[in-house]
Structure formats: C-alpha cells, structure tokens
Length: 391
Ligand SMILES: *Cc1c(COP(=O)(O)O)cnc(C)c1O
Image 1 (cartoon, rainbow, N blue to C red):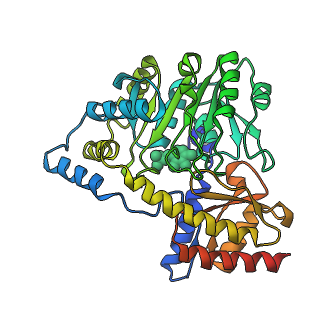
Image 2 (cartoon, rainbow, N blue to C red; image 1 turned 90 degrees about the vertical axis):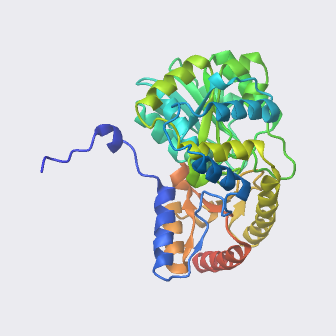
C-alpha cells in the first residue's frame, strides 16, 4: 500500500465537533441509553407534505437527469422573486447559484473569492464551519470576540479596528447560530457603513431568517442602499426554514461575474443539486407559508420553557435568543472548560450539548431546542442536578 499522507489542506482543519457530538449521542441512544439530546442543528419536524409531493411529482415526470450546474432556471427565478419580496433585494436569476445546502454555498464562495493572504473577519462565537472554510481556501480567518454583555454582536468600531489592507470579506450571520442574536436594522446599517468605507465584501448568512421571536425585524444588509448592495453576497437555503436539512439545497446571490466563477467551480465538482429535490424547493417558495408559522410557534413555546429552566439554575445565565433555535448558556461562573463540562454531562447524565469552544469561545455551551418539550423538561432537570453536583 502506498503511504497514506493526507494533504496539508485537510490536515489544517478539524472535523466538525457538532457533528461528532451529535453522532456520539445517537450512538449512545442506539445502545439503549436514555439520552436527552440538545445537540441537533436541525429542526425536528418533517418536511411539509406539499413540498414532498412536488418532489415526488418531479420524479414521476422524469426530472431525473443532469440539469444546469447553477440550478434549474425555474428555481433560480423563484429565488430571485423571494429575495425581491421578502428582502427588498433586486436580483435576476443570473445573480443566483443553487448549491448543495447553505454550507456548500459558503464553501464555494470561499473557494472562489478567497486566496492566500486574504483575511476574512468572523465574529465569535461563530458557526463552526466559517473559519475552516476560509482555511481550506488558503485564507486567514480573523476572529473577533463578542460577549454576553454586548449581546454577542460585533460593533462597528470592532469591525473597523480589525480591517487591514488584506481584508477581503466580513461574515455576518443574523439570526446567529450559536447565540440566537439578531442584529437590529440600525446595527446592520452601522456595520454596512464600515463595509462601504473600507470597500470590502460582506457575506450575509441568512439561513435562520424565518425563525425569529417577539416580532424582531430582519434586515438584509444589501437592502440598505446601492453601495451596500454592491458589496453584499447573500447565502441562504431551505434547511432551517422548511425543515429540509437532508435535501441539501441552498443558494448564493451576488454579482453575475462571481456567480459565473462559482458556476465554473461547481461544474467541475458537484454539478447540479439533485434535480427532483429542486422541484421541492420551488414548491417551498411558491406554496403556502403557514408551515413556517406552525414550526415557529413550537420553537417559541420551547424557548420559553428552556429560558425559565435555565434562569432557575444558580450559576447559569443566558441571553434571550431572538432568532434560530439555540440557547447559548454562560457557564463561566463554574470555572470549568466547556468541553469538560459537555463531556461529563453526556457521560454522567446522558445529556448532549455543544461546548462553546467549538464556536471559538470558552465559558459557554449551546443547547438546541429543536426537540420535544418532554425531552426539554427531562434534560433540563438533569442539567440542574449536574450543575448542583459541581457547585
Ligand atoms: C445550518 C446552517 C447553515 C446551512 O446549512 P445547510 O444544511 O448546508 O443548508 C448555514 N449557516 C448556519 C449558521 C447554519 O446553522
């Protein structure tokens, strides 16, 4: 056998810790252990029936062949219309590429836009894949810490301070995974001013756009004005809004030349996203939207139960998430590394959570409430007992 030397580009990155912990929790469950898992990064709902029906119909109609690498024209049109209607953004189908999920749209973007010497500004806590994608592309992630007191938001001053002549891109994720933070329109405007002044790109990851609470508004940074629009790349997908994680459909919107270059990359790597799945995505955009509200009500109810339970545990604190389906809980009062906390909690109490260190920040853990109320009640009792035993 030839020597198995793994290429440097892969050696430089670490496997996704969230996927690893979810897998361990699943394996423990399969062994028959009574695990309460708060590790999931996906809605626990099934894909709405009308979306499934559209994909089944596409299969029956023979939509089973290769399609254009950038996506079915009908889907690109539907996305353009969605961006106009929901986000006040003027894009044509030629400004849109359909990808294998939001993760893939961001990965292809990094591969297309970022190279050696380029710096990418990422506020922490961040989604686990951002820095690794930048590293895979040969660029340098520049991590900017944020904290509970500041609502886990990067300030315009912080952004300005981290911009250098090498800065190429700023990653903005609102609503945020893992913190649930939603930037207000005023805050988005203030960040846009820095982006315009420094003349850098911003990629807005809006995958949780549809999951918000207390009527907080969502503003796409590109909608602020022509100067912001010109510098904005928008990444979104179907996974979170429509409970379609396994379908693998996302998209990126931006200038035609960028989309063309991403299409070239895609045409030599994945080619088109599963053709009949794209017809499900069209139905998601063009069909009834009440599924979003139904799931949203369930998330809102669980959020209340989770918050109440966490606030009643001495030593733990957390901000009220305004979007997504995560509680980002501060455990710094317990003075224990987040990975140790999560490992022991899983081993002793069979409760799966994700350590903050996975998101580039110590002193916190992430609990997903994309799970049923009964699991939430049982799991949080165990968490309370675990914390009591430590303090
Ligand atoms: C889930 C998620 C994505 C994309 O997920 P896909 O399943 O690849 O569509 C992108 N960004 C964040 C922050 C996420 O949590």
